[in-house]
Structure formats: structure tokens, C-alpha cells
Image 1 (cartoon, rainbow, N blue to C red):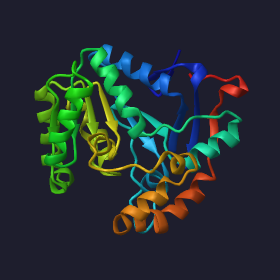
Image 2: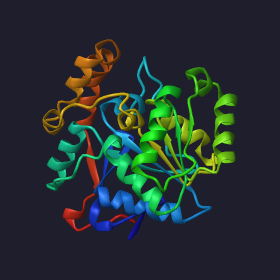
Image 3: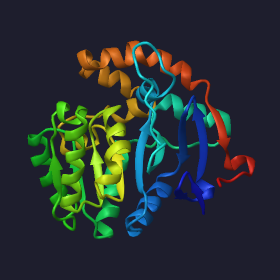
Image 4: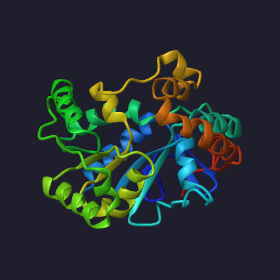
Length: 277
């Protein structure tokens, strides 16, 4: 085992890729689940935040430009594990390392992570989304994970998240609820920024910046068919089903972010006999 930015991971299942100032952790699903399991058993330490690196993430968190502030996360009291979600990022990592790294999306990881939470007897909360979706989500979790009791959900308005005082108050509510793992679905970059700024005060051991994963679990949103996902065409499905919302992300912001991803460099690569330290 080794410590990766404060996160304990299996050396055999990890490589680090830098894209501009964004650190992407190439690893396996089993390594992520084991990391979360250990974190839930380690009360009182630094929070572990798990996020997804895709082209939308690169748009918000790489070099500054006239239309975006170039947000930075990971310099505070939260340990980040940023997983390769975007197909262009996964393909770049495979080319650079010669290792067939898996694509790890929040939507795919949420169910096995909830199974870990249930096994550990921990509590879970959801921050983000709409109240009607939460009702369906709570029912779905009760059916699939009967050992998960006391699931809590919060549906803050965007104005609450953008206001520092009200955003901090949300962290207090989460702490008072005694949540061990918090799923934050506020969209990028709000979810990452909220976790980085307020996560340490919410009392949870683990936070997941997983976007619409809860909506998918509740059936409030649909994912692309498996064949489209396997060919890296999930973006096309989302563009076709939500054109007004997704056109700017994929057609305007996406191409520059794709070019940024091509400048990725590997920092730690198991295939080269190096481990993280």
C-alpha cells in the first residue's frame, strides 16, 4: 500500500496522470471500493473526496481563460481521488501507459459504493437534486439496500450553494444528521467547490462528487445504451436528449478541453515499475 495525496491505494492498481494542473488517478473499481471501505472505518481523519475527471471537469479546472475562473481544488483539508470518467482521458492514459485502465463513472460506482456503506453499517446522505427525485431515490435505496437506514436528502437551490454563508449552513445540517458518506450532485464546478470549501465541516468521512448519479439511480434521468457507452458516444446521447442544456458543453467547451487532454503526462505508472509514495 502507499499514500497517494493522503489517500491509501493499492500500488498495483494505480497510476497518476497530470492534465494541466488536474491530477487524475487511474485505478480499478476494486481499489476505489477498498479505499472507501478503509476510510469509513477510519473515523476522525481527513475527508476523502471522490470525483470524476472528464472534459467538462477540464473545462472548469484547468488553465484560466476569459470565460472561466480556472478553479482549483485539492489544496485544502480534503484528500481528493479524481477518477478517469471521460473516454478521451481514459484513451489517453491507455496510450501513455500501455495499461487498459477502466473507465470509472460516478453512475457506475454509486451502487457498489452504497453496498459498501451498507456492509459497514454507515449512513448516507444526498446533497443536490429535486425533492420529488429524492422520494423515488429513498424508495429505491430501501428496496435495494435494506440495511441502509436513515437516508437523508437535501435539495438546495442554486442560490444557496452560491452564497458562502448558506452553503456553510448546509454543511452544518449534514453534520447534525450524522452522515458518514455524502453524495454531492450539484453539477460541475459547484459540487467540487462545495466539497473543497465546506466538506471538512460536514462531518462525513467520504464525499462523492458524482453529478447526476443519484438521478440515474432513481430513474429520473436515463443513460446512453451500453453500446454507445462502450464506443465513447455517451456525450452524443446526452446531446440528442438534452440539446439546449448540453450543446454548449459538448460543442463549444468540449473541443478545447479535448485538446488540453492531449497534453496529459504520466507521473506514476505501474507498468514502468514505479509506485506512488
